[in-house]
Amino acid sequence: MLNSAHQVAHLDPYALVSAMAAVTQNVSFAVTQSTTYSTPYVLARQFSTLDHLTGGRCAWNIVTSFTESSAKAVGCEKIMGHDERYEMADEFMDVVYK
Image 1: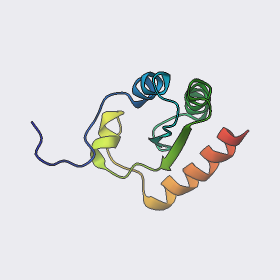
Image 2: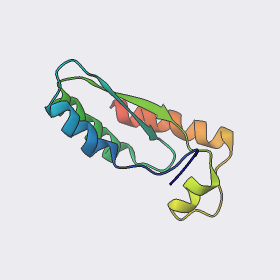
Image 3: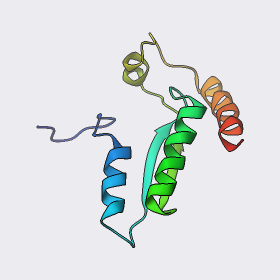
């Protein structure tokens, strides 16, 4: 059991939000997803699906990943620098919006 934690892996929010949206009408949902280790097409598709399933009651909390554990979880040896992450995020968002 975790008494306190930061950046702990949790259950898949896409499945949970879909299930909760099916049994609620007046609740909105926000899912945090990083631009650092995702791909624009896959993320846009996931949020488009959530938008449809929730009837527009879903938001994306856009972040960049800054922990070494996040980098290692996807096979990288170290994290990207701050400026590089934010340049990547800007380009990522340009692609997602299209």
